[in-house]
Amino acid sequence: MISFDYIEVRQPIGVFYLCSIPANVLLKIVSVTRRGQQAEGIQRELSEPRIKKIGEYCSDPDAIFPTPIVVSVNVDANVKVDEEKRKINIGGDESIIGDVIDGQHRLWGIERSSYVESFYLPVVLMFGLTTEQKAYVFSTINSNQVKVSPSLIYDLFDVAKERSPHKTVHQIARVMNNSESSPFHNRLKMLGKKEQNQDNATLSQGTFAKSVLQLISKNPDDDARRIKRGEKLVQDERCPLREYFIDDKDDVITKILMNCYSALKDVFPKEWDIPQKNILWKTTGFRAVIYALPSLIRKGRREKVLTKDYFVMCFSAFRKQLEIEHLTLTSKDFPGGGEQNQKVLAAKIINAVSNLNMEDYIANMIRPADFVEFLENVGELDYHEIYDLAQALQGHNESLVFFKCKEDEEGNREITYPYYDASIGLTEEEAKESLKYLENKYMEGIDADTWYGYRLSLEKALNERD
Image (cartoon, rainbow, N blue to C red; front, side, top):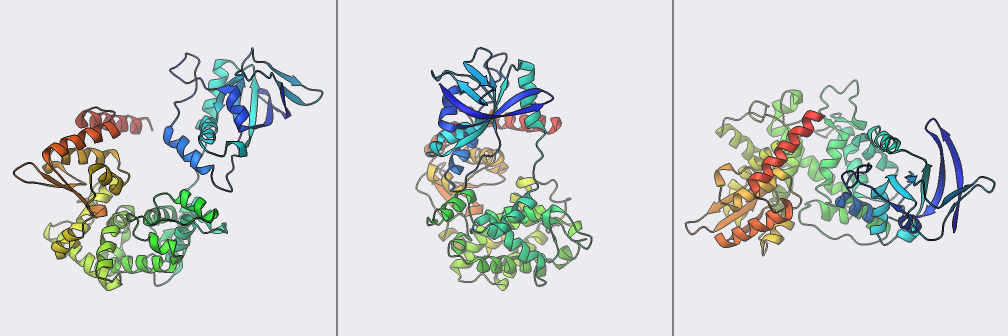
């Protein structure tokens, strides 16, 4: 028999008991009944990415799980409440005592890690719940959570003692907002709220910080944990400002961003004066420049120059291209929002700059050895980009949005992802094999058109529900 001290908690739903139980013990005595497996199941399916992320988080020297795991104890479970000694006594045969109502990802994420022995977890034991009550508790816990403002989250990193990617981008946001020489002076909504004297504030602190973060790290949480453990960070060519972060040169990161957006301000002065009436100084334009920066910085490094004048040259080429195409930086010519529209605008910036010296651009393209390595280089793709890549592999070049594809008479294809200057050459047969790999990796083995149609319908249904 195993015993745990408890605290009795009385609330309108009834009495329940709060205990501290070792994670490795709890994992042996609880289970999960998921919706669809059994009629009385109330839990959702486990999310593998979420479990993986929690498992990685467990390696943080300051890892903490303060909220309780909620368990509904089975009626026939060998669990007794000793009110005299204030103990919960559980039979020693390690049989299942009940179902996890809340906290399954935390619990199985901890199991996935190498630190399961390090965690004693707060556990709420609830007795005598009907299926309806279980569902009510689950839905109450999961539907009443209010998401914290990203701007507040980034601002709170300021109090952290240790260096981290999150703290760096927060401090850069503060410098950009407070410095009178900054193109973002008094234009960032710190803590996500516009102050009385911020008529031209079109970006939140959270948007700014999260966007700059992708230029420094693809896994900032892991970087923060490695720094705490005194481990050395490794370079990642997809993150053009990462080497400065690794070398503790946040001032250089700030200077490059200052040069870049100051140049944008000078090349597009009218748009800068009235940021509310164009997309350039709103989220769409700001993030489009962020998506274009890996390519622009790569070119600047080759030429050993990342000055304001260099970025003026880049954005002047972009402005000229807009004039040739008779495009304005408004919602009329760039309707809608979201990542897809941002990358469309970013591609126009990259194309305009690459046309300044196409031979140099092509000569310095990153060329992975095979399609699997190519996917690793382009990084995480959304489902629109995955479909776009599938179209490129099939030679449907006229419909491409994110990828470029050149095809010769023999069916050989050169596919380019401009945001990281990555390109791969494939024969017609290799393109077919790569398409199968893409379908198996992302599309559950079904064809690209069917999968994409399903994803569009799913997104539409979710939007209508919200």
